[in-house]
Image 1 (cartoon, helix red, strand yellow):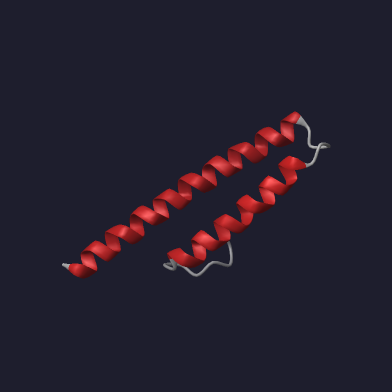
Image 2: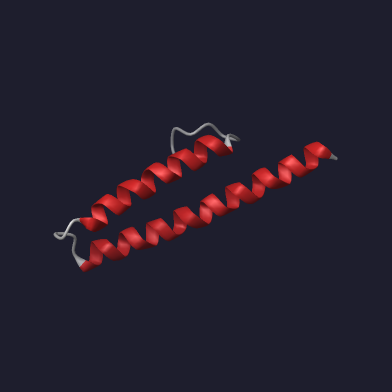
Length: 67
């Protein structure tokens, strides 16, 4: 996400959550067509995957800091 400090998983997670909220608002609009809904669903899936990767990275860093 642009504007997010590199190496700050908390900031990245907050930015992802903010975008997912915006996507959910747009998807609730009855005027959203099927094509746009598909685009939003793909973006949401990518963001969720990215969030999972950020969590995994943060856990690995925490484990290595404890060692």
